[in-house]
Every structure is written in C-alpha cells, then in structure tokens.
Length: 80
Image (cartoon, rainbow, N blue to C red; front, side):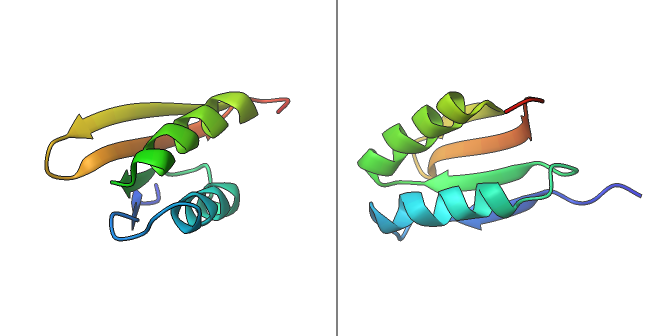
C-alpha cells in the first residue's frame, strides 16, 4: 500500500520561520511519498530550492500566480 502525498502550506509564514519549518518537514519526511510545500515568501522561495539542491534532494518546482511556489520533494539521493 503506497502512502499518500503530504502537503505543507507555508504561504502565511515568512523567512526565517518558513525556511526552518520547511527544512524540518523535509528532514522528517518519509521518502515513500512525495512532500509538497507551498511557499509565498520571496526569501524562502529562493532558499528552499537552493538548500534542496545543496543537500542532494530530487525535487520539482511549480510556479503558480495564486499559490506562489510549489516545491515537490521526491526523494534524497543515496549517499547524501
């Protein structure tokens, strides 16, 4: 049985709290299901993808004029 995708809505949060919450959720997240994070804060929109790339996560970015940025965390590369 596959796990359902989780969504973390941080559109009402501002940096640095939004970044900290996103980072903690990503680190605690079970890689068996994707995690989608909704972000509207400009600093967090820049910092989360940069951190994901630096730490070796596979992710997708989707920009929406209403929702802001959707970051879909898929998995972490082995060895990171």
